[in-house]
Length: 68
Image (cartoon, rainbow, N blue to C red; front, side, top):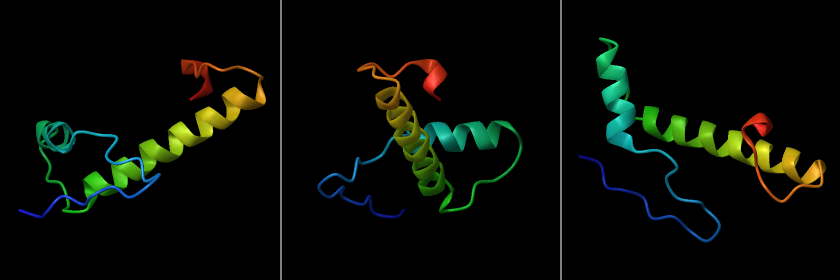
């Protein structure tokens, strides 16, 4: 099994639970590539970053579901 990477300053760390991502993929009857979890993590991070930007642009201090 691959070693977990340590998050650096401002790295954010993991946003998703690897086992849950893999369970969802397996539940659909397909296999997950080794780097899938990293890609999902990056996608979620990008989605949250955009939502935070929208929240700030609208003069709010709370990220809401519609910001996604």
